[in-house]
Amino acid sequence: MRKLLNTLYVSSQGAYLRKEGETVVVEVGGEKKLQLPIHTISSIVCFGNVMCSPFLMGFCAERSVAISFLSERGAFLASARGAVSGNVLLRREHYRKADDADSSLSIAINIVKAKLSNSLAVIHRAIRDHGAKINVNLLKDAANKIKRLIKTLSDAKDLDEVRGYEGEGSYEYFAVFDQLILEQKEDFVFNGRNRRPPLDNVNATLSFAYVILSHDLRSALESVGLDPQVGFLHRDRSGRHSLALDMMEEFRSVIADRLVLSLINRRQIAKKEFAKSASGAVTISDSGRKTILTEYQNRKQEEIFHPYIDEKVKIGQLFFIQANLLARHIRGDIDGYPPFFWR
Image (cartoon, rainbow, N blue to C red; front, top):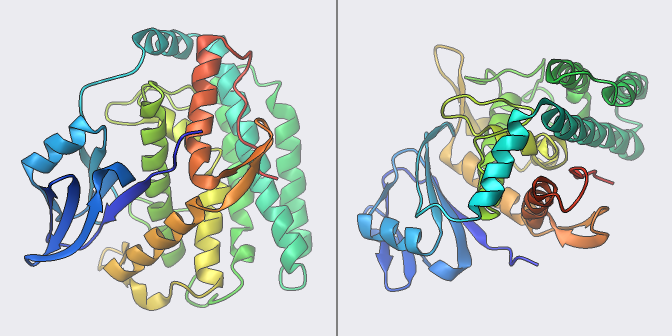
């Protein structure tokens, strides 16, 4: 089993990262704030005005530690990585399957089934745990509609049809998402998904959680030798990591959405952490982002049962397990891609 290493997130504006011996040093205002051995880090993510020394970048490339640069809002800017590694035969087969309509359809159906089933599980758990506080009939109605979509997914004839079911399922899920917010409802009002930019506190938190989830999936796919830009459900678009977006569909509701709901319902994040610009765009403060990142890292250490491999694993290992299973399917070791179903 792969050892679960940490991702170093740096969101302090003006921070400077440098190499010192076998360690990564984070300085802010010339003062050393953090020092970590390189062997404990799988990747580094820099938000906003964060700089890295060229010596550190070369050091990270040697040790296969990817560095990603994102805007303060989490939009991807650039990344620094070492030489391309992995099995070229695997990548060639990956491209062949992505170009094959039947192979792409089969993988996309499995991914969307897992996405809708996991969204369903989030709704069912809310009914079970908080039935007295929420509109159960509303949630049950949405759950029944999502169930019907899951049943019809296998009959999809092409990717457009799959995307149609996926879109309908997401609509039904987010139509009742506000019911899952139990605390601070006056400060965290959700009237549907919006982004680029997010226009309310809930959407700003969701978008940020999706960004860090996407980064982890991209790293997992690269670690097994797959090309994160070549997807099956999401098709090629310049600069887009389509396969990472494909894989993210399985985890959005059970990892990112549950994280956001937990932060709000446990009052770990509050209205004061958000600011709205004149254009209506909502941004999260440095301290708010740190709270989200810390809790996300904590969640990755929690254990969960993986039904396909039939054992308990840490949540942070799920991404590498699913990337490996996809690589095994592409190589022909297993007949179909087995997505992750949350139980």
